[in-house]
Image: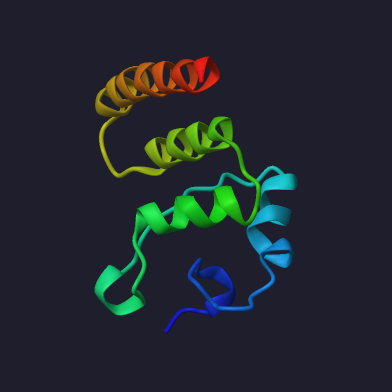
Length: 102
């Protein structure tokens, strides 16, 4: 099983302010949120984004960056990545504008 320090899940009284992902981000590493095995870990991608947003104080703009990093790391051809960056970037920008309007 993977080192639990690298898995974002509910540890009860876990101190998320000391989670390594924040230091990794501050040092400029490309962060991507992923889910491994939701059935085994009792967590999914939505839970991961919820935790980093609520407990680690990452913002919607960070989420966009994480998604774009994921596209860069995807095992697909460059034309697909280019299309995804365009499509998902536009979708994220629309969502960010919607959030600012509320």
